[in-house]
Length: 512
Image (cartoon, rainbow, N blue to C red; front, side):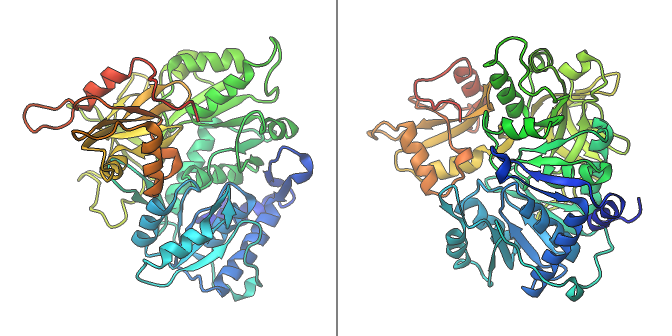
């Protein structure tokens, strides 16, 4: 193909197979489903771009959008790529606390929201947050309808694929989110190498059950555009409800993270022996969370498909990926090999993983250059490379909890918990959990004479502080005192993980 930007790729695919289905909006009932071809995707995205342009969006304008996995969301994102705006996607789970930080730090002039969704009024939140911003904020409703105008008003498409036009957010090790800077080039490279690893065929039907606002959104979109295959979009993934769409469209490739694998396995176990949950499924693929070796063998034996797990992060959406044609031993015990152009280095003293390559981000928003003098980006994760070049993740340096593929900052929750009068000190840790990958556990030391905290009180307090629901602790422990180091009095989280990681607690919520 020719061209370098994401919009060039959209136009290229529309010219090659304009009548081929690109996206299917999945639903439990067929009559509620919608679809769009690659040709219509290109035409409609350009009209949306014109409508946004008439609303004042220009090349370089900063646009935050918080939208679910829908055709309209893909159209809006591609329209912004057509204009050359700087877009900053935010997952719909986030609330005032996180979204306010994103709007302030991006200095956004536009905010696209889904109106009222799942009982939460995103437009009202936008109004609340706009009142505290230094400049004006234009709010755009982008759930069912999108701005529309004649593309004749548009300037030429952007030409520089190496200009930063994407800001994604990851909690990392800090109390607040970190803005990860990407370009069309880095995201296109990630999507291209993902396709090279998974080797889709023309008969494949993919699926997007994860939030499109993840960096995996454009990653997977690039794969679809390059290979000309369709994908089923699921706004609210849940089993067994989502199975109807998977079966109706004979999805062959699914996944997202360890949590998705576990959900499919749980649903499969409800069926009689010999009945496959998804007869058309040939491959589960994903990353973003640890995957126990035994899970690979369970997927192959019970779901009757292959499982390819990889290692990626917001800063580098494609570092390694399991090859579906690799040996069972490698697929079960490693996170795959890096594609051509991706370099991995393991620090000899700590085992920390550093990466370098065209799919790696350009740094962080308003933060110091994170790259070493040789251009490698330290990840904070620990691992080793096997003699065959496969990567094995062994742990991490950074203090985050990976719950269902989502990074949760322990420090962010700790700072909010400290605002509660019944908390003298606290440590938030991740504990192993078969369903979630890790669960969020708050360990609280209370001041003398304080009423004993309950998990419900802790969760209510954090919600009132504006914390996203998916970050809420699922377990609470209240020891007499937190264990501390002798030198600086630092809380010993390793000791807490050992103490509480052996089994369930009475003060724990069921899987969510």
